Image (tube, rainbow, N blue to C red; front, side):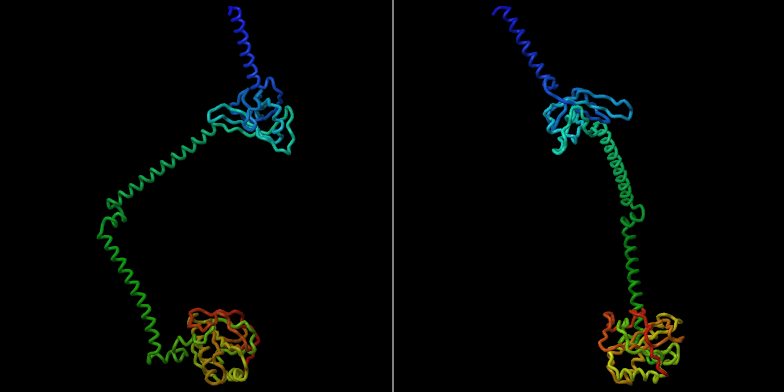
Length: 395
């Protein structure tokens, strides 16, 4: 081949390579394809450059044509993008533009999301919505702040460990109370012995209190002292709760007999009956009437010790019941007692207290809590007031 022919072949090949390069570059920059423009505004473009890639759904679909700064300090940076016409089908008015980074330290590009099918297509020159970019510098600052906080936590943990080691060393060397207890066996033995002695003393005291109560109960039955309790009507305290109830039935009574303590008893502080005949009207009524339950309710005046007055009212109710049961014929299982302790009865002129014998109709059922009770240290519960029709018999 001649020299001229080789020169011609070189020139043709060079032109072919140049043409291919122009078409490749033109394809990337969309110089030879139909495009349209879209705009997006950002507070910060995070280093985005003109000519940067624009991706739609992760596919290269355009380039950044220009980046314009705002005219005022409070404005936003405007990014103008050239996009392939084919993206009209998927980019809608609700599509979102964002600036992202290729990898951790790669270059920035603009990513546009798909729009909704029911939204209108964008037109040439439209402005679409955007979201702020993730700035790596800010991310590194936050990571650095977290690392600093973690370092402070580690330092505090190290300091606390050092303090614990110091305390442990002092305990091992016998310093302080805990150290003495751990290292001095004799001191520990003495403390343990003292604790054991205190426990034994407490147990002995409890046993002494129990024995004192038992002795007091035995004294009640001693022939030298039994008269003192008999005069007050309650030699055996257990008998006070034999027929005691905690509250009155809810039914309306068919009859109520009311008395003052002075009408039945001769002294303010005893349970010894002196005017038994006053109760005859009650006994006659119980004999001739079919009733469900009858309750002897006794209250004392407002003077004296509350616990003693409660016991006294229980004793008075008990001796009234014993008199009615012994002298009149009726079902004594239906006659109950209720000592109220210190109460005010406004319907009676009762300085020492009052007595009410309340009789309920057949079929009356006592409340659930009215099982027979033992002697109690607290006043019973009244489910309803005692203000009810009263029949006051003549003495």
